[in-house]
Length: 108
Image 1 (cartoon, rainbow, N blue to C red):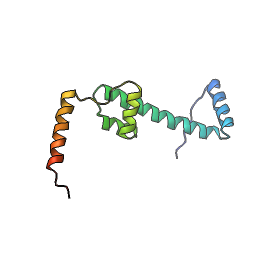
Image 2: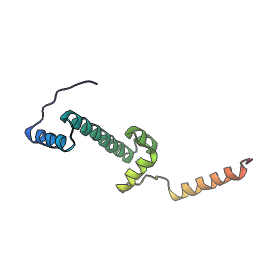
Image 3: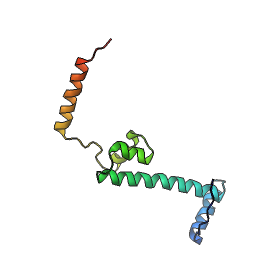
Image 4: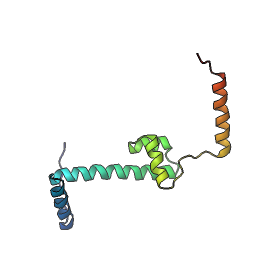
């Protein structure tokens, strides 16, 4: 693990001290937890923005954010962002094609 120095203003230092006391933990541990949570949150936001801009597919967005496709879809849905980008006619065409595959499958 690497170490780094950062400057923290008095307000944030008081908040870190309060959190460390509440959690019976060190400030360093609190900072590590904050950074980890912040990185996860930022990756989800970036993945969402890239998905909205059609730079990422749902699968790629989930991969970038480090979550499952289902988790990414739920995250988008909770923010009223459609995660299913097929038109009704495309979905109907795909359903017919899938039905054809199933009817032609050799089931033992």
